[in-house]
Length: 262
Image (tube, rainbow, N blue to C red; front, side, top):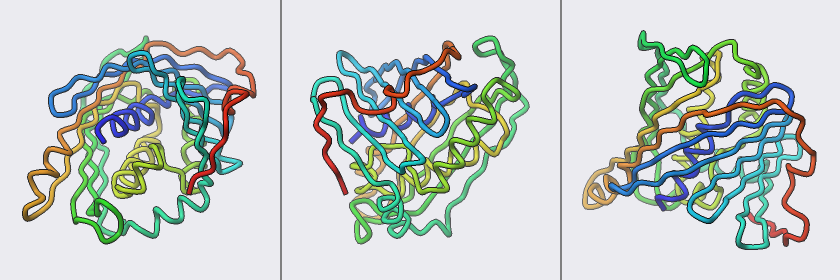
């Protein structure tokens, strides 16, 4: 369970500047119960489509978000098949299974600044929390908390494209994590989506982000939930290029078997 959460955090944290077509190379490291998980990622954005290639060890895991077609593809470099979800239906199911009335969200300036990838970044403190259930609507009750500092660059190339992509995706019910994990823990998926809604509203691009995940509950499951949390991920942009990208980059590779998921 830890690996999908770390990959999801890395994916959303590194979906950065879009200026026409854009390629972003980034690095990240994470902790899950004390285990380090170094990753590299390349993010591609072209209009209302985004692709992320996350490399861990000898495996590349890819996700393609097609907002206009409302499709999400997930595949890796070892299995010659791609899972695909209809995000209109999937987003509606996630929305119905999570009550967001008690969600709390805060992204506030902390008065700090620093240089990242040649850009002046402003520091913010982020905290999101949402009461939810694990294992479906009738599962164990828990609270998901995301927190940590974020360094946002304002006025960078692609800021408007970044905001427009996320606004369009969120308006259509997209999530930015593996749907298979989201089905079991929809609260995590929704709080991560809210995180990027808040970051986009700050008016810039997150060039560096530390995301700490905690889960809490009551009764005999409290200890297990505490261990399931304890996840952290730090991501940093290394370079941004604005060369044109081929349209077929935003589709599964030729020859891959497409498997429809629900």
